[in-house]
Image 1 (spheres, rainbow, N blue to C red):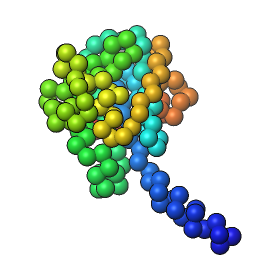
Image 2 (cartoon, one colour; image 1 turned 135 degrees about the vertical axis):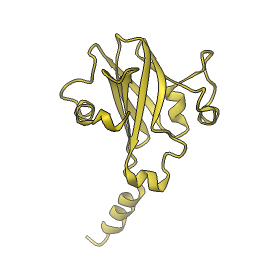
Image 3 (cartoon, rainbow, N blue to C red; image 1 turned 135 degrees about the horizontal axis):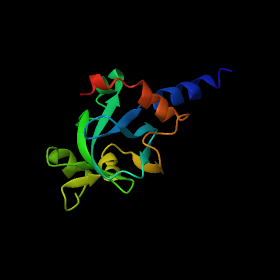
Amino acid sequence: MKRLLPPLLFFALATPGQTLKLIVWDSDMQTKLGAGESSGSKFSLQLVKDYSGPVKVIFSQSADEKSRNTFSSLQSSYDGLLKNGQLSLLTSSDEKAAAAAGPVTGNGSLPLGKFLQQYKLSLTTQTTGQNSAAPDSPLSRDLHATDISKLK
C-alpha cells in the first residue's frame, strides 16, 4: 500500500482540473446553438449544423483556473460566426490572441480550433440537427443550467 501512495499523489497533482467551457448563442442570445468543454488537452464541441450567421461565444472557467491564470488572455465572450457546422471567432477586437494562435481567415475570423491551440487544446466538433445539445448529454445539462442574465 505504501508503494502505491506516491504514484497516486503524483497523478493527482499532475492532472489539475483545467476545464474550460463554452456556450454558443445566436447574436441576440435567445437560442443556444452549441456547447463545449475541455478534458485534458481535448476540447469537445457540439454545434447545430442547420444554422449560419453571427453568434456570441461565451467562455467560462473556474475561480481556481482564473487565479492560476490557466487560460491567460482569454476573454469571457467573443463575437463569432457559425456556418455549416464550423465556428470561427471574430478577431478584429482581439488581435493579440489571434496573432498568438495563428493566421486569420480573409474575413477577419479565426477558426475555433486554431484559437484553442494557444491553450494547447485540440478541437473535436460534433454537429446535430437540433438548436441545442442532445437533451441527455452533459453539455446540454450545462446549457440548460446556465443563467444567461449573468452572461449579458
